[in-house]
Length: 244
Picture 1 (cartoon, rainbow, N blue to C red):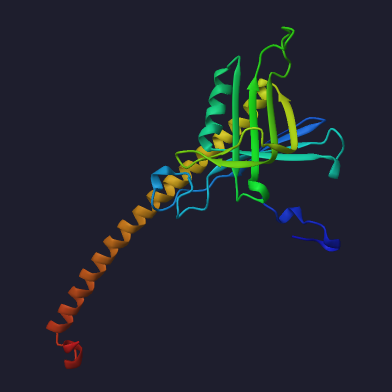
Picture 2 (tube, rainbow, N blue to C red; picture 1 turned 90 degrees about the horizontal axis):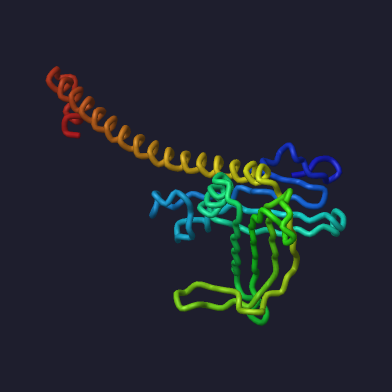
């Protein structure tokens, strides 16, 4: 999408940003990557990688560390979490936990040279005090690492990053207050719920339309059958029309 001079026309772009938090050194953004379940499992609401679905329903965490400068000097990383994981995080923030730790590592994509594939690492934590026992002003930490690792397969068909094979391409960390985290994930919770209401409502509307169509079709068939009989009784139909 371009304007004069080859510049991007941002007025024509619809953002998928749910929420963003910025400091003078970094930013954290939650991005909508939700996708509906396919026709095979409509009650799942969210896509879970089935054959008739376009991948997985996700919330993306994107982070940019510009402490060393902007442009090519900045570091951009991302990690994906499921809608349930986003809602779980929101529930912990809402309940006011004092200590929290969540770690997620995912390896995905086709294995490249020497068996390496893409890896994302995510750590979300909350600690009330630092190592010296002093109360933290920003108790929440979000860390993301992107890189590559050797893909292994376990007995149930899943994949994992083999021990000591991870090579980092970039990392970023950001610190947040309770209010900052609530702002971010309350927005995510609201958007996920809105998406779920829309998907379940769409299913119901589709079923209602199908029922209405069948009812109208039945009524119209009966109506035209009655008209045909009356025309026949009145002798208004030609012989070839009767034969038809």
